[in-house]
Picture 1 (cartoon, rainbow, N blue to C red):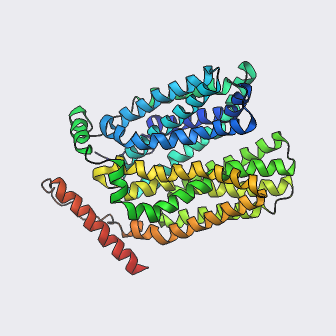
Picture 2: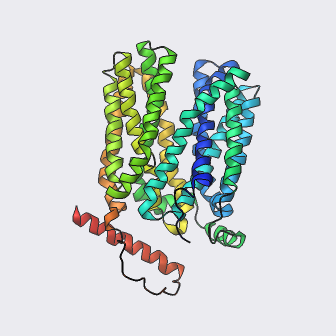
Picture 3: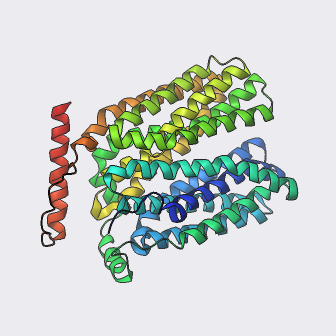
Length: 438
C-alpha cells in the first residue's frame, strides 16, 4: 500500500482531530462551573475537572486490546460512541455523581480515540514523514482546543453554562461521521482481527511492561516528565495570574495568544524532527518549558506574565507530536497496540500528576516553590531525553537512505518469527552505530 499524502488524510484524520479538540476546548471552561452549579465547593469542583485525566489513564489500560480486536477504524468509532455517552451525561447531569461519571467516561473515550489514531498513522505513514504527521495531528487538536472556547462562549450565551457541553456533543458526532470514512488497513478484516485477537490473549499490558521495562524505566520516565511539564502550565499560569490580581478577561487573552503560538510551531517542529532527529526537538522543547516555569517566579506584572505565557506556548508547541512520534519509533510491530497502551499510560500519568503536584505544593508552600519544582522536573526530563533518545531511536539520516538503483525483486514472505528477529537485530545494530557515532 502506498503511503497517503497529508492532504488525503485531512478529511478522515486531521479534521476529525480538530473537531475533537474543539469539543474539548468548548467544554473545558464549563466543567468546574457546572460542578459549582450543582453545589460543589471549589476543592470538589477542581477534583471533578481532574477526573478527565483519571478517565484517560483508565482508558489507556484496555485501549490497546480494543484496537487489536476491532481495528483502528472500529476502535475510533467505539471511542466516539463512548464519548457521546460521556458528553451527554455531562450535558444532562442533575447530580455531581452523574457529572463526574460523564467526565470520566469522556476521558476514557479520549484514550481509546487517541491510541487508535496513533496506531493508524504509525501504520500508513513512512518513517521519513512520521514526525510531521504526528505533529500535524497534535497541532490540529490544539487548533480545535483554541477555537472551542469561542464557539462555546456563543452557546453559553444562548443556553447557559452547559452550552459548552452541547458544542462538544456536536463536535464528537461530526468527528465520528468523518472518521467513519476512514479506510480499513490491509489485513484488518474480521478474519485477520480474530486471529490477532487470539494471539494477543497471550500478550497483556503487564507482559508489555515487563518485556520493555528497561525502555519504560529510562526513556519512559522522560515521557512521563514531559507529560507533567506540559500539563502543569494549565494549573500554574492561572494561579500565578490570580496571585498578581490579573482580571479574567486579560487572563483569557493571554491564554489565547499562548495557544495561537502553540499551534503555529507544531508543524515546523515535526518537519525539524524528520530532518534533524527526535532529540533535536524533544530536548529544546523541554528546556524552553523549564525556562518558562523558572522565569514565572520573576513575573510581577501583566506584561511579564504574558511573556512567560508565550515562552510556555512555544515550548508546548514544539513538544506537540514528540510523544506520539517516539512511541511509533520504538513500538514493536507484533504488539504495537499493547505497547502504545503502556507508552501512553506513562505520558497520561504525567499529565494527570502535573496539576495535582502544583496544587499540592501550593497548599503547603508559596506558589513560586511549585513553579520551581516543576521547572526542575522539566530539566530532568530534558536530561533523560538527551541521554536515551539515541539509545532507542536512530538518527533519521542513519536510516536506510533512498537510492536511485532499481528495486530488487521481491523476496518470498518470511515467517513472523524471522521478521521479529530481523527487526530486533536491526534495532541493536542501529543503537550500536548511534552510540559509536556519539
